[in-house]
Length: 141
Image (cartoon, rainbow, N blue to C red):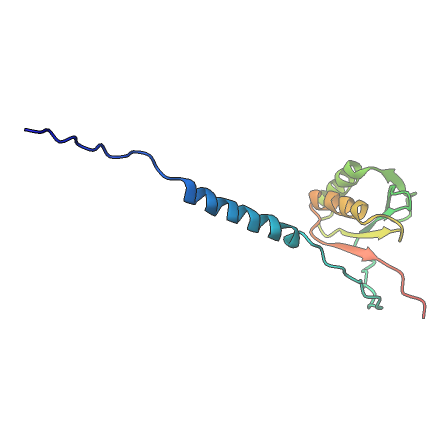
């Protein structure tokens, strides 16, 4: 009797089709990724707005940013105090504990970079301020 040889099952997996699919997907992502990171050009409108009404009975605090980016705190008749971002957060947090209805207004020079304004607003948010008013000048007509 002749013995037949039994074939063993092949335990190897053919990965060539998977590699082809992976390379196609890689090319698709490489082509589409730069399109997803584009920004949008925005022209900020120049309009006049109604002024904020500030109740003189309530306490308010003004944080001013100079052209150089230096932060100053103005409160009532006191002389403006120069502070850094941590100082702004600490000062506002201390006053907010004493006067929960404190209103904070931010006045910044037109040449101050947007990032600097955002860092001050972040410090104010860390101090517990949920709302910050922005002081502007009305456009000349």
